Length: 511
Image (cartoon, rainbow, N blue to C red; front, side):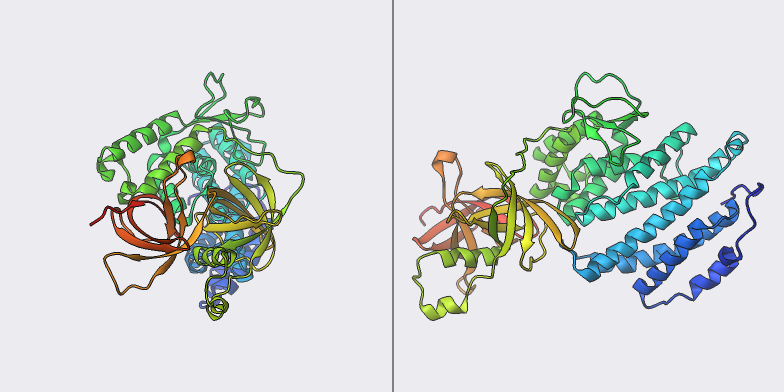
């Protein structure tokens, strides 16, 4: 970086001169990424508080950045399978990554914000582009880390993103791209907004990665625009740069006002592209010709696109008010534990020694934050809650009712080890524990599944919840439950998550 050298800033601090910093970095522990990250964070905090000449600051920042980029993949590997609520070691790893990003963002932002205004009029403005994009990019990575871990966004991060983008607009460099990587302030800002408005707390880890890929491919279809009258609230989001939040959909807030230099994010062209892609995928058009990855041919990917369509339109969801009284429920998480809990509720028609050998897992205690006709919002209260992720099966038993409700996790939020909230969609009013064996094999041991009987009054076909990748369309299966044995056929896949498949079934035709 050929940043401004002349000026009247203080003399270089010998502790943070590039030569001394290079020697200090080389002495960091090579085989302990966490210890190296902790030491680096402490050094960066002091560095960001020091008064340095712009050129020296940026040279040192680039060295720090290179070292951080080498450390982060080592730390990220520890979070590869993390699911909320995070354990203490996992949370510490996430803290180290977030803090590294935060201090780099603060360092680059200070390099930009400390430049005297008079220099902006004599040709140095373009040299501010690189540190400005770096600062925004590290704030965006902080947001992405929180989204992947279902946590609240770090404090003040959106306020900083708004502030830096407003600077880029004021200096008319918001669309200028760096050579490597080719990103502009607008690219970083727009992508971060789209990720936030996609409601990542409702996505699985795999879906979030697919979302990032989709945004990288198609974000330029969304438009950041100055405020203007809004005739149709669909596909319009208001952004208040003085608020520490991404913004609000017009369809959800009809009283949104233009103030504090507000901007609009218009997603109409992006939503139209989504509609076209979904229509062409249903017609059998190859995913690659639509600018989509190979996974786009799957039902799960297309279901994700349908949800993105709703979120990026800003559609207003029907929400239930939080109840003033919070009843408590017992909960079991995961197909096998739910199966055992349902078996324990049945009349004891098994030998006593068999029932004792397969007891239900101890339930955890939750409170109901709200309840609707479609499901529940719960907060964990006590008991060792196993990791839970979007797409997991959860069964709850209210203490004032005898029924057990089987649900699917639709969103998760966990801000600290003691905080875990989930949103549940009830799958069916009746669920029965069963076992099944594919009809084309005699050697396979029966596997536990959940059977949801047909409900003609609600126009619901019979279905099963089974482990992933066990059955395909038209596969025959033999199902045994407390009412006897059924010969069925897998009709169609309703939904697939990392934990379970929901499959509609029909009676098998006689041979």
